[in-house]
Amino acid sequence: MGKEEAITFVVFARDESRRIPYLLRNLGGYGGVLVMLDDRTRDDTAAEARKFGARVELFQHPGWTEGAETVALVEKLAKTDWLYWAYVDELLTKSLLEKMAMLSRQDNYRAVWMWRKNYNYGGVKLDDGYTLRFFKKGAIDFMGNQIGRFGKIAVPEDQVLYLPRGEKYAVHHFSTYDVSKFEAAHGKYSTEEAKANLRLGRHFSGLKLVGKPIYFFLKYMIVGGAWRWGWRGLIITAQYCFYFFNIQAKMWEIENNVTVESMEKTYDSMKDKLLSDFDEEKK
Image 1: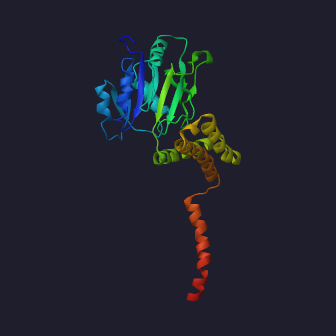
Image 2: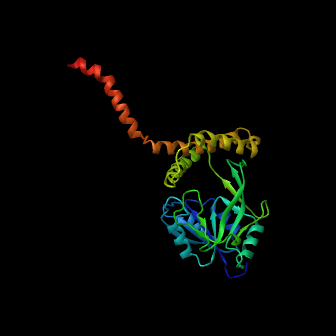
Image 3: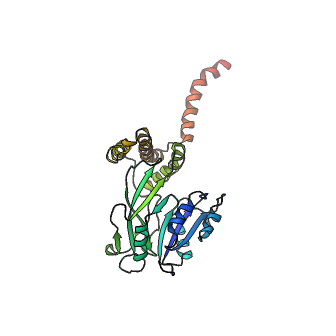
């Protein structure tokens, strides 16, 4: 790129002093970097980011990054029209960065889909797919956005570009979840997904409760080739299958008011009945 920055790479981070240098080395020279640092951060992420010339802004994390308020704050802080939503567990190919630099100097497209290659559990390939991260301010509507989504495209279809699949223009995603971390994080995600689905008028489906885990097992383990990784492939596949099972299970719980408290009330009645004989003996 030239001296004038045309892209702002927006990086969301919390306690990422180990991983953020790789990303900043990757992005260096292709645009300005704005690190949106979770105000609960306790490590040296800010210092590491500033070593690479990044601008660091503390913000209060709302629960997920693509909420309308967060996006409005980012668009206010960013000095460029073009934004790229970056994460510390990803790297971009040089060809992709050069293509983005070129696209930032044209007016035909305002939103760009790019191919993402996903590595799970230390390298397991489950599936790759398109991701929308590069866009011009105002091209994406984040109002009412749900967890796991990336807003709604707010420009005509002819202003949306899909870059070719494959390595040349790829985002490489290095997902770092062992079983414990996966359970902790995706337990929260599945709860939010269940609530979001119900807010959108969707209801529990027994077919999805059973069918989705089977579908994703076949998609990841067989079609995606996770079987080549042996037990490692099976473990991460099963984790995702259970995640999709949990979304439906939690929707059922919410719709049927099944909670720890409702169980305790049921058990209270059962316990009182069992103890009635003891009470009779004391009289």
